[in-house]
Figure 1 (cartoon, rainbow, N blue to C red):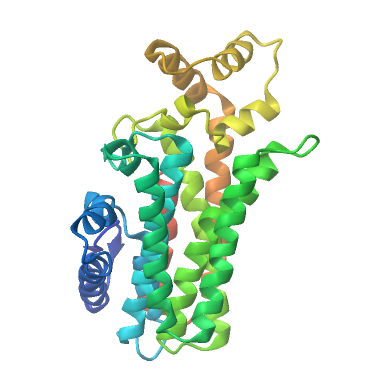
Figure 2 (cartoon, rainbow, N blue to C red):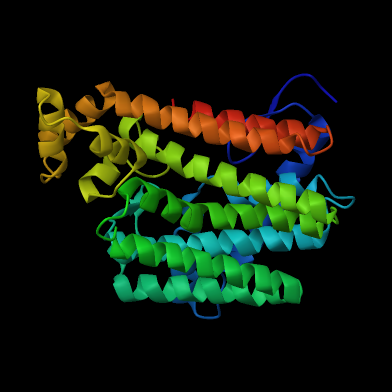
Length: 340
């Protein structure tokens, strides 16, 4: 063991144990190659389209969590651990193709989205093909893995449907949004942690603890992205500041603001007006960002992310002390610091 933190691949947070860092790095390299192999077809165009988003990079947050959760089982380097990491990342990548079509996004991770480079049909079919590849691979992990994956996929789709339909009259917009985040983001990250523990041979109790941890930290991770959309001054996660605002996508700071806005206050009234306007205008977008950054709703959003990260950290108290647990605690710190 060394006391000098080493950077974990993909996320850049500190891992204080040299052996763990080496296993994680090796595991992520293996996952990366397996992803390329899984997204390869006899048809060259299918390979090109399927690897388009993949080669643009990404945090590989879900495979990382699979590998860290596997540390709580007796066989953290079991082949099934890597295979399940590939399954969850393929599933995540597939959702990105569909999301970009629904959002009419032109960019993904700083490059042209598949729908912008080709068209919506290609993007949708490529996403479907990646889902099929994930389903094929998970079938090799056994019936229980198939059941878990199917239920996770069901939550992903249901969350997307509810996001598409929007808030029903009389429902709380913020509660609706948080439920969508739980299904669209929390579900797959929870499954990532569950798969890692399960295929490393961890006990059912540890599997459930890590699943619950993944659900909580996954939601915090997405909500931290909401704050980055307002606060970042550089390209983060493949999108520039204000991307969600331009597209009219509801996010945590905006929903908190709308719930507490006082139209009799000049700055609140102006911000409400801007949020309901066309923010493709750079000047209006810049003013909107400035007003949101100065509003107490942003601090409330940051506090919500901190609370969720703390809730996730509390779950880790049920796990044995180990370098893996310390790494997951560092992950909680990362989620908070990347949003403030």
